[in-house]
Amino acid sequence: MLSNYINLTIIVMRKVNLLDPWQVTGLTDGDGSFYVTISKSVKNEIGWSVSINFQIVASENSANVQMLELVKSFFCNIGNISRHGSDNTIRYTVGGVSNCKIIQTHFVNYPLLTYKLVYFHLWSTVLDIMGKGEHLTSVTKNNWY
Figure (spheres, rainbow, N blue to C red):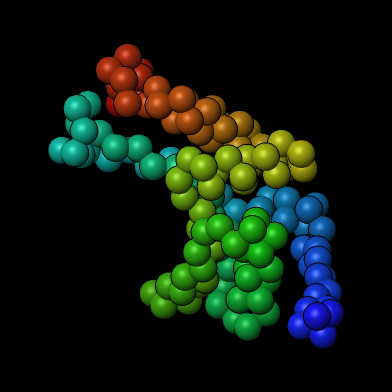
């Protein structure tokens, strides 16, 4: 009977980050941005939509493509890498509240060192408001729009 059993070895793979967290912070200090887009919308009651994003832009070459792929992997493969031929750049973009919360956690633990930290704090305030759904209220509409 024992010959009917298969020996099974389970190998646990541990995620290995090839980037130091401070490298991600430094790259963002130089080439990253935190932005919020507010636009008219007929799809909701207040007549506006709000989207939140994080982005790193680099000139298009094989080294930068690999670098942005490492950044994407660092952030658990959230977001997208896209090419923009009009200005010969590649962009790593993360959008949406839940994905941006992952980005926020990183920069809380590994803060930016330049004035971009101020923009991150403003972006984080909007992200927290969006996380509570308060960006969809008429009170917020009167304060934001």
